Every structure is written in structure tokens, then in C-alpha cells.
Image (cartoon, rainbow, N blue to C red; front, side, top):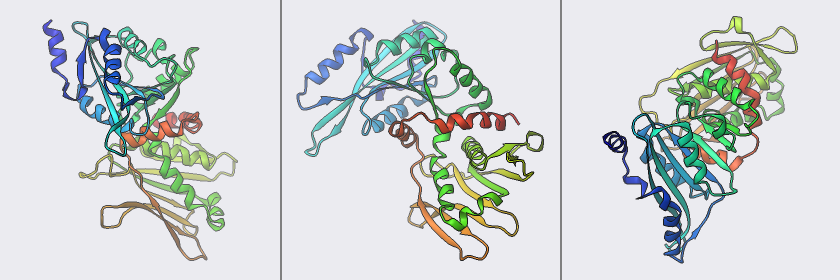
Length: 374
């Protein structure tokens, strides 16, 4: 019992709502919605957040509360603690949107679990026993993939959200995901938050070449520089793979090392394209306010065009991308592109809104794995 008490003492339960026995979860939720005729239960999906870190409990509850403002769901928050006495503690609460008159209107459920002495079968049984039936399962795995990530779990997942920024060895983790995807029971779609972070940068790069004169410089591009914020190298790697893919380039492993990658046009014209990565260390940076990519520079040689995407600030706290095109024989042009939030809520919300097969990430993954092994 002492080991179980030690497990419970590690987490801050204040944000988790009302503690109830596992067998009372469904009846407790029914009583909640029956007690107030002015509210309605809403659920379009199951969203499970899995973590083996006790430090994220309060923050994950905040994330669920923010996500349910736009995405009605049954949210399962699972905190897994392997080793020690086996025990399950559970809590329930509801996150309600407020109507125009200030009254509660539509509510989503959150069911939280602390699994002491956790194992793969315990996690699997808890998740599957408390899903909202017939609704898809989006599984947000936080941190390193552990032995809990096994076929009997991921065979039931519709979308798997991971974050390669948190991985000590991204190459090994992506290999594990690729091997799992080849198994008969795997049908899930993978989303990496580090890749999702690159969405608006990819849009900004494409915008640089929306003019006919700029588009004519694409085949002459020979160099790119990507400056990324501390802790966001994986987003820079995804952007590197995307640039090479769009320019139809193949990696030259023997001429690439560290943060300098050399590519060759697959057309066989013996033309090379070099991409270099540089870390920008900002002690005041935060995930929500500082973009993962600070600057992207593209150039077509000494006498060719140059395209710059630079994070700028209007002096009043509003940030945006400054897109500049310098093409020989033409006046320099520029555009402004808004910077969206880079926090986890915005990234996961974007995944839930876009849905789709995430084919671009699948297409780029072999290239990303090759870059990570250099």
C-alpha cells in the first residue's frame, strides 16, 4: 500500500475533478448531465492523451479544456507509472462551453486515470473499456515510445499524434513507427507535431514563388539556409526534406554531415543543392510566441535570385513573416504573412481540423530518416 500511496503522491490531482472508483465512472457522468437540464453532452471523437510523466497532469487538463472549445470529444487522460504496486485511480469532470446568456451549453467529458504499476495490458484495457463507442480514437502519445506501444493497442488507433521534438533518438523512434505500420493490424495515420509546425513555413516558401518571374528561378536554386529556434531542430529537418522533395533532389550522404546536407537533382544534370541548418538560441523564447523556424534564405547562386523569409515584429507584440524576393532585372517585392500560434493546442487543433491521410508526411519520412542517420 505504501508504494501505491507513493505513486499517487507524485501527481497534482487538483485539476482532475472528482475522484471516483473506476466502476462508478459512467454512472457519475450520467448523473452529472441528468442534474442540469440546461446542458448537453457532445462528443465527435475519443481523444486519449497518454503520458509517462507526472509533471504534465495540470497542463494536459488545460490542453483538453482548450481543445474541447472547438472539438467536442470524450477525453481520456492517462498517466502511466510502471513498477510498484498495481492500482488504478480515476477522476471525472466536464468542460463546458458557455452560451450567449452566460449559461452552460455544450459539455465534453474528461476521464483521467493514474495507473500505478502500469503495464501494456493495463493501459490497453483501461483505454478500450472507457471509449465512447463507435467514435474514432485519436491517441496523443507524449514522450518516448515505450513497451506500452504494441500491436494490440495501436491496431485500434485511428490517428496517432507524436512529437519528435521530445525524442532523444528520433531516427530509432521513426524506425519503430515504420515497423509497426507494416504489421497487419496497423491502420493508424501518424501526425508529428514537429511536422505540423512546418505547415505555415511551407506555405510561406510556396508564396515566395507565386509570381512568374520568381517561379522561373526555381530550377536555378542552389543553396538554402534554415535558422531554427532552440529545441526545434526536428521541424527544420522536416522542412529540409520537404524542400528537397519539392525540388526533386536526392540526398548525397557521402557529402553531407552534421547540419549541412548536399542534394543532387534527380534529373541527372549534376547540379547540387545545399541546405544548412543553424540553431538560434533565444533565452526568452516560448513555444507559443516563438516560431520553430526563425529564418529561411533561398538563393540561386551569385548572380541569381534570392528569397528571404524572416520573422519580424511590428514593435507592438505582433509577429509576422516578412517575405522578400530579389530577382535580377526586377524591382524587389515583399509580402507579409501572419504567424499563427505554435502552442500544442494550435498544432493538435490543426490536425483535428484538417484530418486527411497526411500523405506528405508519409512521403517525406524516408528522407527524414536518412537525414537523421548522417
